[in-house]
Image (cartoon, rainbow, N blue to C red):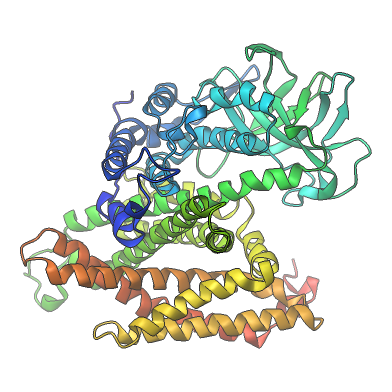
Length: 613
């Protein structure tokens, strides 16, 4: 293991709060399908994950960033220490904490899984991409693979013997997946010959495993153009024999490694399939032309995972900035600004520092609540499946609606929180002696991959708002309205809850305006405002969840003696909710006015008028 210092920070008290106090994880622990899990098991898992994050993966974060990956003779080599970390993480069982026991997992609730992932990715984003991509491959094959494919691949993937990737993007296509040119030709034995090039493949190769299982979108010869004609193939780096053992090389080559702004410890590869005509794949599930629907099962999980990545980095950036603000002394108090002899104070006392820290705190804790809310809906949808169709549909519908919001709002705000953390440090934050500059570089990719945030916004507006006749959206907005109705006369938070109600009404008005644009020949306006609408939904949701936390905190404070150590924690919930409601939530109404105004200057400006150079 590396002797480097760990810079990762985590707030386990807040993790316990959102799991058990806000989203009532204890209500369904010990019940099917979570019979093996109780509160003690959850807390022990979180404690062990924190140990791994601070002792194993955390110390490798900066060293892996500096060293990066290298490509030699077609093989990618990861930074020093990664191999040992890979072994330690998989031996701990943390990467399969929510996988079904029949495949070597522990069957934990999704809420536990997302908090484990927050710590692992927050401690070392680049490293965690390798096992996370493999997990995604395993999850997809568990849902879509044939029994033979599951037997052949799943145990080795989930236990860390093999890695995995998802291969969508091509040089000429970018996010336009339907333009893919990678081809598949059926062979007499039922396999397919694969030929094509994929780019931007995260964790595309490594020397930590003896095989990498690629999931590749390709078009079978003669299939329809666009996304409808795409199929999904299992294409391992080394062919897999019938008994599950590793076979010969499969004509999958690493063309190059991208030189990136961040996540340098993760190899982002150009992969060439079938350059020598010898690349063989097998059809996922044995079904042609189902590639996009199958891949979206992985993509939805990946989009949630990106939201967790954003949360992980935002949280540790905030906590590092807080530590620095407590220790760094500079300037005198504003109360003594005329006294040149006044003592220096910790910068935590300065108003602007406190403003930035409270903004970071409220966003981090609000996004964590959003992540666990989504996970709670996942768990409850599983519990009610086949037992209560109405409740199952409600929870599954909220998962669908909240996924693009979590992915986008968390990834956008992660970069902004990291920027605020740098600003808190001042000039020290811009140098590599401190971790926040790396956090900012690593976080920037989150708003781009697994579908840019504009794609998420268009998915929200174009698909999710109208799903099941708009029922999911109506239920979400109804939940917010019910909260407002219950708490709008609260002695401490009444004004803020009323502001939440006004924001909810602004969102309703924008939903109606978007429908008008779509139905009255004004569809080109939708892409101009979709991102703003998604931001509105993120801010509305986070403010709601923070105010909900504040209500829980106030009830707890009434029962605590003055000297109790939890008082400071609950007071933090009070001020985080108030700050967000007073400083961020008003932006919902402002964005709504922009959407309703329907400005089209981006279309009206002539191409040549953008610049005359």
